Image (tube, rainbow, N blue to C red; front, side, top):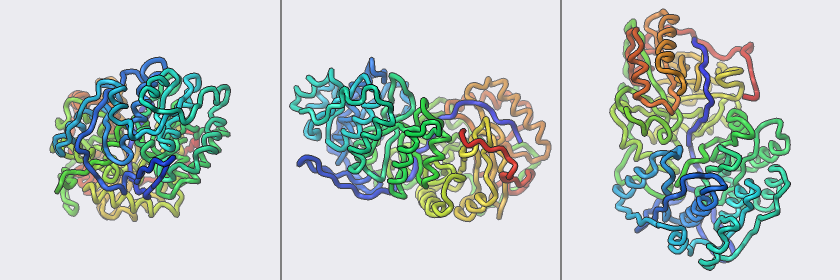
Length: 562
């Protein structure tokens, strides 16, 4: 129905966390390591906060930042103690407001630590020693995070040895010189041989994203708490050795395991990484930049709190569409990194994909977002399952169990719309993102209580309607770089091309576009358009089917390397 728009995609969602209880002992120092979903919530009498440096590069603040993130993971293993403030330009922008929210709702006092010395002095009892990574080999830092969780070892480089020993810590592992001249697949094979048997099978952590001299290991504190294995192995078929290790890790994980973090922008694509994970019936939870989960996952919601959505229509309500153009707006790339924190929220009806797994792993953060919502903010579930998955890549026998998890989380979070996305056979630029009929059948069967489905990220052409519940694909993708005048002209063209009325124009907004920008674009559209909440939009669409039912066809193009 429309032409795909271009832009590099960084997708995010964060999802379901069923975990087992993990207990570990290391050199006489016992510590509980219950999975974040299963561990009892608890509040500290007081907590500390420390501000990280501004620049996450090896020649600037990364070494010390990595040390403080490792200290956080160790200190928060059995209780919430240390919260980190990240730079203002960090991907997640609600860190200080969330800390204030926890303090206000639960009366938790935070004491600021002004120096690394003060931080280590306050929290040294949770550290057994230190591991030294090699500044000549970036990958050694990733390995050091694995060592940290297993050995209770603070992560430092050689310049910080005097700092660590001043506080009475001793060297436990020295990675200097060991990996020089070795490719990543050799380094991670050595790490797997040494550490894999002792690592969690519930979580594994990809410290991908930026590369070169930079690294943004925001999720590392949670990985340390969970005694996870850290890597950035490629899912690209050209990287034969890395791909083999990648598959080995996924095969060894529990059926309910979570692949946290994000793929390396240098090595492979999002499509390759998520497809491989989905092939094993697992789910991805991004990003590598997601911070402070070792702290916030301990914090309960306030007594009596329930997740309540802003439903505009009742589940069994019947509406009748008029002969006009209806438009609805959806952002799926997490509430914490996109337009949620930008000016204008509440000005237009807007749908936001919820990080559903936070109902189990990080409920206080979801309470924060739910309480912040305006009457125009509407929450939906996804993405494709209980986490970020590609449904065409999920083994058929694993599909019902995964969707059962997703249904349970949707019920907890009061969600009635489910979103699907698949990049296993293409993306916005090549191949296709359509859903075959048998897969659509399965979604309708597994989600009998939703009022409708949304499909795609860029534009797509999968459409259906069953028992008053539509499945609609996006007709337009609002590229963040698209000039406002051009975007308005695009919408005008779609309105002119789709002449049947009512016309239901579903728009996916890339997360970096503010609602003010979207409002300005819509103000430029001369044709009459009614912007409506997504649940009302789907109910109206069910009343007047002016689109063709369509599923993926055998002749549709496929690209297995999107």
